[in-house]
Each structure stands twice: as C-alpha cells, then as structure tokens.
Length: 414
Image 1 (spheres, rainbow, N blue to C red):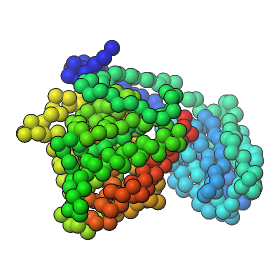
Image 2 (image 1 turned 180 degrees about the horizontal axis):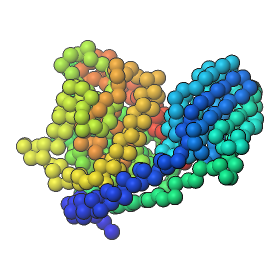
Image 3 (image 1 turned 180 degrees about the vertical axis):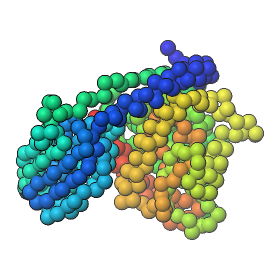
Image 4 (image 1 turned 45 degrees about the vertical axis):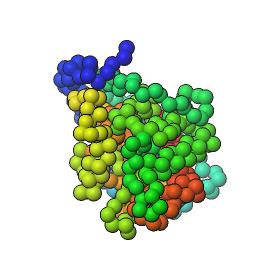
C-alpha cells in the first residue's frame, strides 16, 4: 500500500500518541534495574580483573590490531569509569556500547590475546588471563564467559518492536538507474549533485565556474569510483543539468530504499581566502552563524518567483518520526566523521569541519544523510582543485573510501 505525506499526517499523529507510552517503556526495559555496574578494573601484564556491584548476564572478549587493544563486552552490565592499568596495558576505557551492554577497552603496548578466564563463584567478578603474541598469531575470534547459573542476571523480560509506515514521497520524478553489482543485498547509496537547471548555485569569480557543473562532475566521479570497486550500488539524483526541488532529492533516496544519501555542493564566501571542505548534518539548531546562513541560502533553492515549490510535500511532524529521525541523525553524524577522516587524505578541510544546520535536503526521517561542501568556488586554490579532473578524482576517492568504510562498519556491527 502506498502512502503520501498528506494522507498519512492525521493517522500518524494519532498513532504517535497511542504508541508514546509503549516507546517510553521500551527504553526502560532495555536497562534492567538489576543490571550490574562495573565497579573496579585492574589490569597488568598477566591478568585482567573486572568487578561488578551486581549480577550481569555474560561477558565476551576479543583482540584488535593497529592500535593493539582488547575489548571486553559485558552483557547486562552498565559502564563505570576508567580503571587501573599497569605493565603492557597502557590505558583502560569504558562506555555503554549498547543499552544493555557495557564495553571495556584495554589499550596495549603490543598484540595480546585472552587465553582463558571465568567468573567468580558469586558472579560478581571476572578474571581473564592475558598473553602477548605476534601480530600474525592474533586470534580474531571472540571468547565468551558465563557466570554460574544461580548468579546470572536475567535478560529483560519485555521488549517491544513498534513499526509504523512512514510513507513515500509522491512519485513526480522518474527514479534514476542504479549502477554497480546486480545484487540487491549490496548496500545502496544515492549521490546528489546540488543545484542544476535554472539554478547554477555558486559562481566562481575565477573563471566563471558554476557550482552545478562542478558538483555534477564530482558526483559522477564518485559513482565511477564505487562501481569500479564493486562493493556497493550507487544512483545519482541527476546525471544532466536539470533542476530538482529539495524534497525530490532526498525523496529519490527514500523511494529507492537507499541506506545513505550524500548531497555534494561547493561553497562561496565574500572573503576569498576562505577555503577547505565542510560536512553538514541535520540539526534544527545551527552550530554557528555561518551554518545558519548556509541553510537559509540552500533552502531558498526551492523558491522560484516567490513560490515555494517544496511546500506541498513537507515532512509529517509526529513523535514517531522524530524518534526515527533522531537515530538517523546519529548515523549521519558517524558517517560525517568517517568522511572527514577519509577525505582529509585527499583534500583540505576547514577548522571544525563537521557542522550542523537545518537543511531541507537532509530531512529524510529514515535515510542517513550528509551535505558535503567540497570547498569554496570563491577561492583560487579550491576552484582549481574542484574543477580539474585530477582534483575531482581525489575528492571522489575520499568520498568513496568513506562510503565503503561506513558499510563495512555496519556489516561488522550486524
């Protein structure tokens, strides 16, 4: 059954209130009251000891290379703070990996593995034997440990899964072709070249380069890079000089069922010394004045002769969509960090390159999305890089590497 935004607005608003109590109780049941918190950690060359102030369900440990680490996951546990490190263990860190799982990470001087271990008779401490090994002998498997049955925390007895159709945008725009492997199990990313048609975007004072032309060339280079690797599928919102309203851009990604949406742009500034790339993710509160100005400028792309072409297809405002979008925003922020990490090997980024803005093109409630300002067309060095084949290839490699790293990480998490 197909839904459009206007037909489902009333139904979703009513459903939001009906499910609100259930959703709230879901968050509570993920953190059982009897979960044991990590109260003490001692680690040295030979042994790791983790103590708890209550019962936990189980524990598992695995080793990592580059940097050398051992991670210990405590299911049914809550993270505490720090820990005592000595010998080959340089530092101890801990945090809540999942609502019902605490993760402890031991930073090491050299590769090591857990050879054996177990819980105490009362289930309130875990001892693991540590042994150094050569990197090529590292056991990449996970070792699991269970407390005695009578001293084992019970998993949450209740859990809820609430699924509500968010609907699809209206089908005014023909869906683009999908390039890459003919395998629907491969993840799909949609690349959006900003502006187009009557809307040129920024215009460079250095050679008169149009943003719409430069970013389309970069988008195609990203597609070609991804297709050559064969790891993911990719589609472009536009392959020609045509205009799309902002909702149509992310609407294409939603209709295709994309797992990632990247809108590529090139910035402009009154100060021609401004240079470097910036990654934006969605927030109703802009991270700075410049981010707010960018959102105002980019969001005006929908307006022609005073008419807002996107008004007929606005997002539904409801509790359920807000919750979905909050998780989507978290994934988007994680990808932004990857994009900066991979992209900085090829191009220069600004200071504090991850910023937040209320950008319409990023408002798909269920598709992780970023807007990538690849540089400034008002800067001589940036426009030379972004308008050249070599520069476009460098930017494309950085983006493609980040995309592949993102989906590889998701595969490992599954």
